[in-house]
Image (cartoon, rainbow, N blue to C red):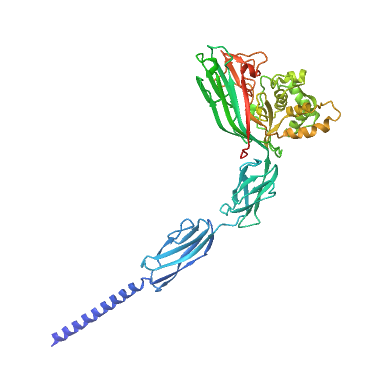
Length: 544
């Protein structure tokens, strides 16, 4: 009996223990099921952000409340906004994007929030034009170069101050209508109070094809003939395209060589086997040349003499710049008499003095050789190379960088004898500035005026204004600088009255240069050398 009681007691105890065990297991199973979410909602700290800024997206609610809030985030367009695994959203570009969260415990449960990305509001902006001087009838472009803050929208609307001078499209394409100055303004689309402007000069232009033909058939057979032809290059004021060389019987042609001053030349050679009649060649190119408009002559800083050493040195014909020399003494007197202190004041004083004291002499061969000391002491005049070489030498003697530019006028069909030298000086804060006292004096001679006339001052002031800081478009620059060694190097010795210096260097490279049987062929006698220049004008004005 006792045994039976004990058995019953043990069975009861076992049953109780099992009941407790099951009671512990069943609630656990129920809780696990409860942690599997059936719904989630999201919350963003802000739903509108600017490009580059951030917002935070997180799970706001979950059902049931005890369910896991663990999710993965995804952006509908990463180009507009990205999102990290922690829900940090970063704006990339303006637009609308959907940020979606997917439950890690139940991938069927999702929620989304829309985020708008906007560009920051511009506080300021800057614009620039592809060229400041655009040809009449031509085009250029204006565009936004920077905006503050950096990530602000660059979207702008363009307007012009004078549609008669130039029009502008909303893409920034400027079409020049007639000569004048116009202001192009860009206004921010986001903040219309923010504007920026640029001034453009609509200028005259000259364009067409130049042909330089050389013929050395009048020289005897059995000898070597060589020519170097100046080839212009593009810069801010001229565009050179379609360069062609036609020399079918030449034994050697180098289309582009560089001389010691960096100018480009076309080298052509006929060896002794070539019959004289076959010694012909033609160099042609298309040029679009812009009128040079005087810039705003702002002087800032000082001349970097190391950087501009090339344009401060003495040349074969410049004379000495040392204290007590003719050139230095004259330059010092000019600036002292004018009480000139700055670079700009000194350059203008020398320009004015030259116009008042020198003259144009049409009897000089070619453009002249620019023998400065002889001009200052004896002749008191000359042609363009002479007169502008005086200007350059006086400036250099005062420590102002200056240089001659050699080219040819493109103002007629036959331009064989139209070589012309211009001058430039360097103004810190502005750059290279043109000045052509030689053309002032040429126009005076053409008009029958002299600096001894009673009405000289009233006559000459508007002429000087035309050639101070600017110049016309009817000219193409071929080369710069003096005392040049060509490539291949010239071999002829100096010739009296010729363009070669005493040391065999080339005085300037404004003319074709030729050698026959190792001897110099005078470029000043186009009939002896037999070369021609022609210009066929067209009306292409897209010159920027």
